[in-house]
Amino acid sequence: VKCGKVDGTAVPEIIQPRLSAIKVDAKTGFAHPAIEAGFIELIPLVKSNGCVGLTISNSYNCGVLGYHVERLAEAGLVGIGFTNSPASIAPVGGKKPVIGTNPFALAVPDSAGGVAFVLDQSASVVAKSEIIMRAREGDSIPEGWGLDAEGQTTTDPEIALKGSMAPSGGYKGFGTGLLVEVMAAALSGAMLGLQASPFSGTAGGPPRTGQCFLAFDPNAYSGAEFAERITILTEAIQSQEGARLPGDRRKENRQRIEIEGVEVEKSLIKRIQTFCT
Image (cartoon, rainbow, N blue to C red; front, side, top):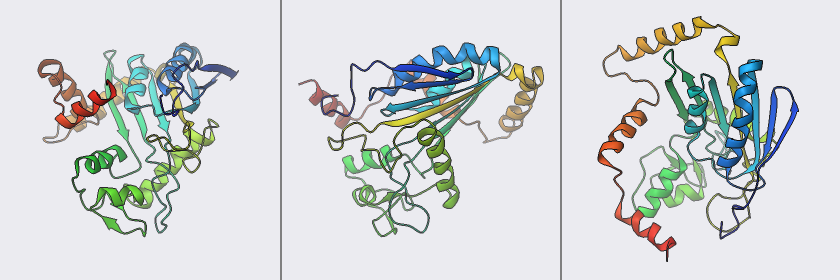
């Protein structure tokens, strides 16, 4: 907020151009209140219409994308989310970043009014924040996480941050990121990763990135068969020794944290304290 990346006083503007379409302009504010404003309109519309699309433009980083789609699943909806970010992944065979790590997420309701699973993954091998943290701590990164300015793999996080992130699965990961770029940026009218300023630092003003959410009411489609199919699918995975559903580890960590609290590195505590002085 202090450096001008985010307008802390921004009030999201909601527009509904068509019955099943909702647009929210975050006005260069945080993504979270813009998404919240959109969801308030979206959830009842999905219940009555079967499916609704929501786009957010001119926003800042939305944090963990899975958190947002999980809220849709808690409302009994299948939720799919996309969010773009400043360019950090070069096309396979190229050297210059074109798209960001661009996560997408899927949350699915279960038959008991809860959430069956949450899939949340990015187009890169690892989240960019992980490489930033390694650079801050002075640690190296594993082979295959990042590339230098010439497109060659590197274990130096500083060099990787100046080069590009490695796409997950090569051209398939880049293709996934391209899908997200179309949904979250082109469809919402937000800045492309190529146009967006960095989330961190002071250069370039607000990044003006975007998000897109699609929500479906299973009752409008397969009805009771949906829950039956999801139960069969999840049990086929969980019944195998060593296998787990997407999001299970995060769910376990939440339960553990409620009992044990959160373990935080001393360096992070010191960094937070500098913001308070």
